[in-house]
Image 1 (cartoon, rainbow, N blue to C red):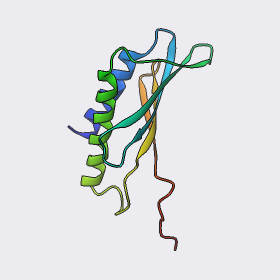
Image 2 (cartoon, rainbow, N blue to C red):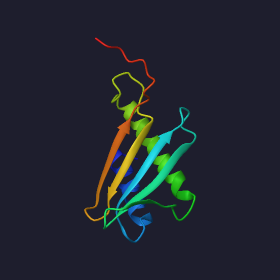
Image 3 (tube, rainbow, N blue to C red):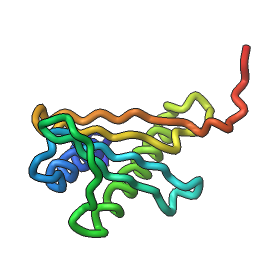
Image 4 (cartoon, one colour):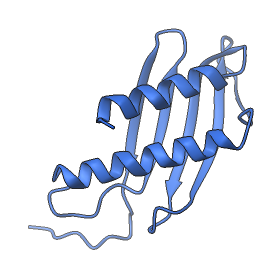
Length: 117
């Protein structure tokens, strides 16, 4: 699966799962170091700007999001996009339902001892 295919898969899934009043879906995700489980929090913002949480329609959604993020992390490592440093381990996914745009902000383990020059 290519990076674009992974992004499209996540975006379509979030559009399909979005509550009816949602204009934006936000997922906070944190992968385990072993990539064998993931903490996912699903929120949405409605047309009035109010933020609330929601649960996806089935447990399969969690698995699809986790597997997609694991695949994306593996692609980043395989393509040498980490500059020899550990890859991201968490992210915030925002799906603009109205505009059809997906944004992922990657976060890195803040306990990493990165070299400073």
